[in-house]
Amino acid sequence: MIRIGFGFDVHQLVADRPLWLGGICIPHTHGLLGHSDADVLIHAMCDALLGAAGMRDIGFHFPDTGEEFRGIDSKILLRRTVDLLADKGWHIVNTDATICAEQPKLNPHIHTMQATLAPLMDIEPDAVSIKATTTERLGFTGRQEGISAFAVALIEKS
View 1 (cartoon, rainbow, N blue to C red):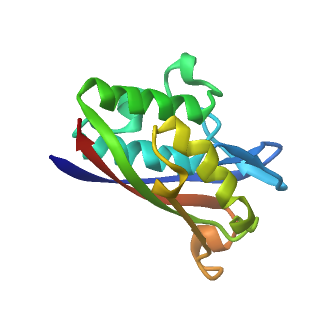
View 2 (cartoon, one colour):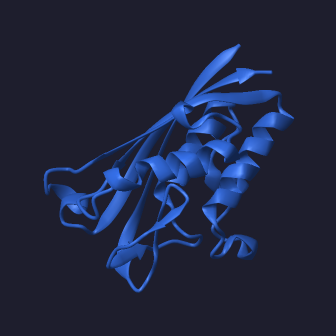
């Protein structure tokens, strides 16, 4: 049996925070505001994976009211998500994601993101598709007020 899931996340850009995307810290003047490290890409991927398995969403499993999740590295949340799926007999086939940001330019970082995320999901880097786009200066993304990410995931029963 195979299933697909969809995930979406958005966080506000603020000064004096590091910018974490795809499990890596990217040099930029602003970072994302959130209870955790606010990695929108990983959060969208977690939601896609959990949704595919019919296991609700990231906020259900890792609530932003939980002190144990304050400032947590989202790579830990992704690994825990993979473990939750494995407990139910699911494994990941592939993921496909798009990050929406005006700045910084993300294409130079995509290979490193794939190499960082793949082992956490027990898949090969070429099974982790990551794309970057802008919104042509439209909306909150275009005004550089925030960054969003969309993800889909294909999972299969072990």
